[in-house]
Length: 218
View 1 (spheres, rainbow, N blue to C red):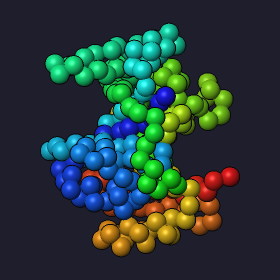
View 2: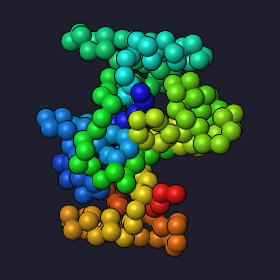
View 3: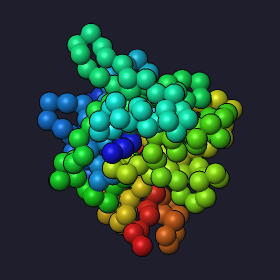
View 4: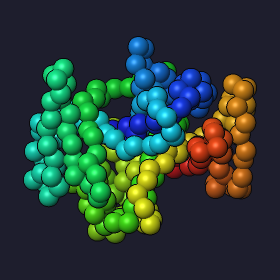
């Protein structure tokens, strides 16, 4: 299994903890994890607004072996508490992959999918790493920049002068209905675009906003 699970480091975890459920995500009881119809988000308190890419997999030793056999270095690590994770080599850093269960909370809005934008000076290597961990490319594998994880979430690779990550969402429904739900929860939301290209933008802070793209199924 493979699931996209970025981490949002934030100075205001309560704000995001209120906004994510308004988007249709469900918080796992007693954790900082929020489930969507596709993918998951982790919240982490911090001194700045940052986004880190991460994933979840099933049997981590098997995941690391298959990733390494595909051509990308992957190391199983264990911390002092005995928790196991995998560190996967990526351009300029390693990407964490933690243990995850196959099923998410059934009460999520199943139309909502987590999307992580990966801007990097080395998009070819980033795309290779995503293929090697088992993400499914959209279009010819050698040219793909858009990848889907089997158990939820998307990663889109873009060329950029420096490396950073940004979280957005796809919505397989009417973003006008989603806007009403977000506004009812006390947040502002702006719609743009027409037809099948409508976008909902939800400002969070001076340094973070969420873009939700309407992508009707079929």
